[in-house]
Length: 464
View 1 (cartoon, rainbow, N blue to C red):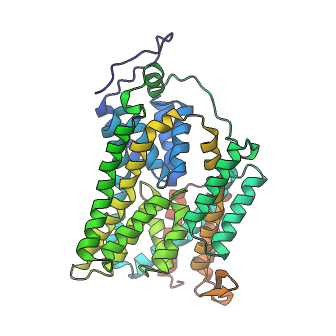
View 2: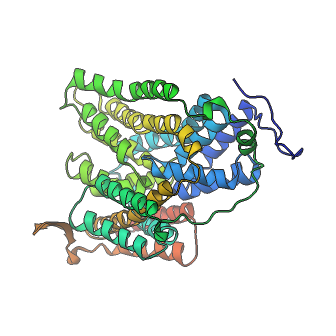
View 3: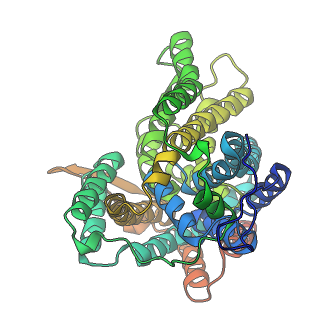
């Protein structure tokens, strides 16, 4: 039941928190359609609309919700939308906000996946994706710099980033173990009172936003921790997530590509800390090298698709699932198998996101200001910088060089490029994209568009 409007004590001008659901629906659709540019851009859009324009949530509560979402596996921007929607209109608000946030991306990535499967080897399309890959390389490097400036505030954080890079680049340590270790270090460091793990200072503006007014006067029932309700919610969402997975395993067996997709991406849903850039290194490690679902350059193509469409960058996983099923369709028509594989990937990727929010958010609201959680977040973010640096180097190797040789010796597990196989056109485009981003400050979409046009021009001239 929606609570009655409340005015904050002593502040007659405090806003009513009785936000009409129809108005919220329009706002969440607007947020979804503007959610380009990766998590940083998406969070900025939500901040501008929800904090500055609509005054639905204060700066401090917005950052508190964001910090929780960054601690979770999965896309933090989508989970932040779900969290705020849940605060406003309970479960249906969270469902609408979270679903609308990914719906445009689902449609766009599916359409592009179909085009890629049908025409990916056609000269024009191949040239377009050639340019796209070079731009994506520069964008990933820019992500390292952007996150590093925010996360590496002291020598301890720099050391964590360096250790994470060495572990994954040279020793092939699985990404989840890096995140778990970093989180434990941050948690313990914060509990011991180490200043290196203290949260950065936040603005402490007056809590006069809609949600804060609501919470400050009388906390709604849905935002109060309740163990029995927690168990009910967890049971429902675990069933929605895992029953389809179990059904596929029972009916099709473990050898089916659909069973493999369901299991692999369900696992991804529990370890995708740090957003799409960070987890792609692990996805590439498994989807490319273990399952052989797609090639390294195709992973870059998929990331380029996700960069140029609204929604979370983790939507690139739908492209991976599409190609996996398309190329191992069995008795199904390949295109139908691809569509089903992509949708299955999306389901097992995002269903857990609602579970994390609906189960954990009431307790997180109670834990506002917990320094130990903030310390874990800071350490994880620092480690993610090292993981994304590994991803940028991996992308660079497979974009700029035509030949790469794996080396496995003395515990090392690295890929060494053949310097004589450098792709001059790809290198030139990557440098162009980097100059456009770092020197002239161009946004993601102009850089991607320019590189795609350059790729088409190079293809037409026979230079690629």
